[in-house]
Each structure stands twice: as C-alpha cells, then as structure tokens.
Image 1 (cartoon, rainbow, N blue to C red):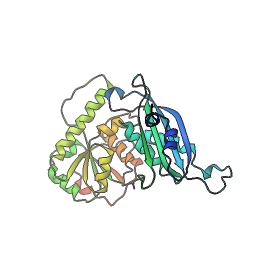
Image 2 (tube, rainbow, N blue to C red; image 1 turned 90 degrees about the vertical axis):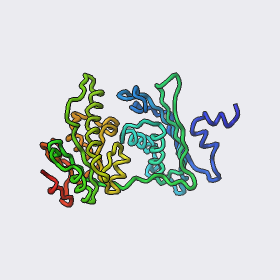
Image 3 (tube, rainbow, N blue to C red; image 1 turned 30 degrees about the vertical axis):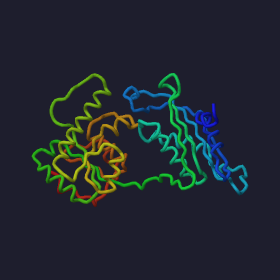
Length: 305
C-alpha cells in the first residue's frame, strides 16, 4: 500500500500531520465520538436512530502567552462535541456531507481554529462503516458566519376565511404590505385517505395542506410555495410573499408534535422563525399563540373578513 492510499484511510490526525503546511499549529482531537441519531435520505432511515461516529481534528494557533492552566485560554474539547450536538439538534438531515460542512463551519467560527478535519461514519447501515471526510480552513478560507436573523409575520388563514374571497386580490394586498409575510393554510377541503399508521397519516394530512397551498399560490405571480428553511429565509430576507408547505420541515424537525393541526403548526413555525407576529384569521384561538411577540407595524386588519 503506497503512502497516499494509506493516508486516505488513516485517522484524520494522521492526515493533518501529513498535510501540515510551513506554519506549525497545535492540534486537538475528538476520537470515536458515537451518537444515536436519526439521519439519512432513505425512507428506511426515517423514524429510527442509528449510530454515527465522529472523528475531528482541529489545528489551532499556538498560544504565545503562558496558558496558566486556564481553560479559557484554549479551544476546549467541549466546543467540538457542542458543535456536533447543536447541528444534530437544529433539524433532521439527509446527508452526512451537509452535517460535516455545518460542523466545520461552526468550529471555524472559534478564533483559535485554523483548519478542521472531520470524518463522520454511519455504523449500522451495512457490514462496514459508511462515511465522509472533509477538510476545511487554511489560507483564503472564510467560514460561514451565523446569518442575521430575519423576523417574519406569520398569518394563518382558514378555509372559512378564504371562502368567497377574491383570492388573487387578497394575495395582492398581502404582497403590497412590502413586509416579510409567510402564509399558512388549512388542508384542502374534501375527503382524504385515512390509515392506522401515524407516520403515514401525518404525511397524508400535511400533503393535503400543501395541495391547498399550491392551489392558492396559483392565483398570484408574487407568491411562492416554500418547503425548506433555506427557501423561507430567502423569501423573508427579500420580503417575498410565501405560502408554507410544511411536510419537510415538520417531518425533519427534532420536536415532538402533539398535533399536526395546521393552525398549531403555524404557531410552531412562528416560534421557529422568531416571528414578529402570528395572526390567526378565521380560526379559533390556539393554545400557545399568546406566547409569541407581537408588533403593531404590520397592518392586517383590512384583510380580516
């Protein structure tokens, strides 16, 4: 086995040593950190946890001043395990590549961190370990900074409130607010399939909400149906009117839902997005709505029936 092949399968610590650049850095490492987590793009990986192993090496700037046995002067190992826990807790992910990139970006926000080597492996998907390894940092690398939070207005509109409305005109009036507005709607009216499987039923019910969202969005060129946090963040930052398609975010969430009722999910979305306001139009008050902050600069009074 030649040296290049050996290093390809070596521990990240060996890779870090072999690829050292002229400047000598110190290194800290996390070996064989195993977490039970739900992750994966295949349906058989949903609703179950599997063991995932993390190996991380971080090159850090040597400390020029005396350490004085003070933990605040060094990059603590806890920062590595915290980065893993934060990214695993943020949302359910399909790809190890996504998880590795997010962990690397978070670690590289630490002022001492120069370069990071990350290997993540699934231990239960086959007879061997299946994984990815990435290297991030070094000269010219700019880690992804924490995005500045945008605070939208969440508006839930029931089917009864939409009945008899000129929907195109209604959406135009929302668009004219020139504010970050995310609309949430009920499921499309009419019969739908029922099953005794809770996960299957949740998908059926959520997809019925999305069907209604697409039907409503078809009335306007200024309205997008959005399904992911990335799409939502873009719409919010650009003051684009959006209708939320909840399936992906809800099914990927690490939260436990007592109810998949659309109005309750609208409140959950408001909490996730740290909304300025959460308004329920044509719906009865839902527990938890009063826990959301509210402001007066978003005028929806003219939109109420």
